[in-house]
Image (tube, rainbow, N blue to C red):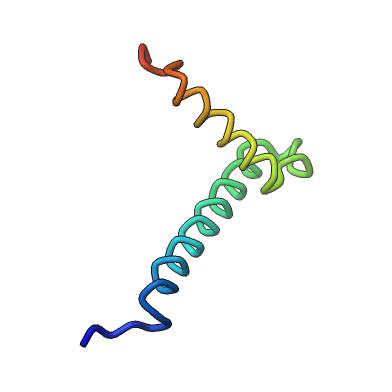
Length: 66
């Protein structure tokens, strides 16, 4: 019988949530260290929006020549 911490479905969701939140926190901290003059402008929302725009550009094929 497999052993789950929470449940078969909740364990992967929990891991995904923890991974995404850790990545966002790390990106935010790194950006604030690189750009201290803009520290108040760097929010989780701005990071997610930038990531979304980059993902959309990648999906459209803008990075094929890079």
